[in-house]
Image (cartoon, rainbow, N blue to C red; front, side, top):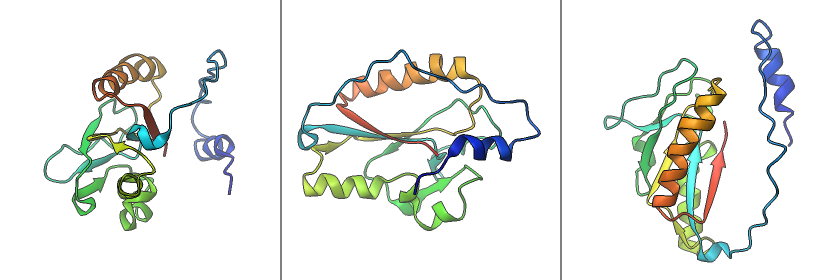
Length: 157
């Protein structure tokens, strides 16, 4: 079922100034031609997932610009969710916001060549677009290049 996200957000934050959505209209569509069965695939989620007892939880306020690096072999029972808008559904099944087990299944089945050794999570609610586009995306792209990623699954929450 499709969700018309922007009107929902506007209604939810009606007491706030209107959010200035970023429009990236000048980016050309680039077809993906490599067979996924030969790709190293990264998982990126804005769910605020972190490893309990090993990593600092994300701040629950807006504009936490940090990332957490999650190893691909993490036990899902060791994960926690800092994003207060996602509980309790995501706590029942972490895969609805951070589909690490489903991607491991796809790797075992040979649908994807390899799941990247490290997944990345950050918080949603980042309203400083210049920092998101400059600092955060630059750092993340550097990590993906370092891991020689062919494709990434971005799970926005």
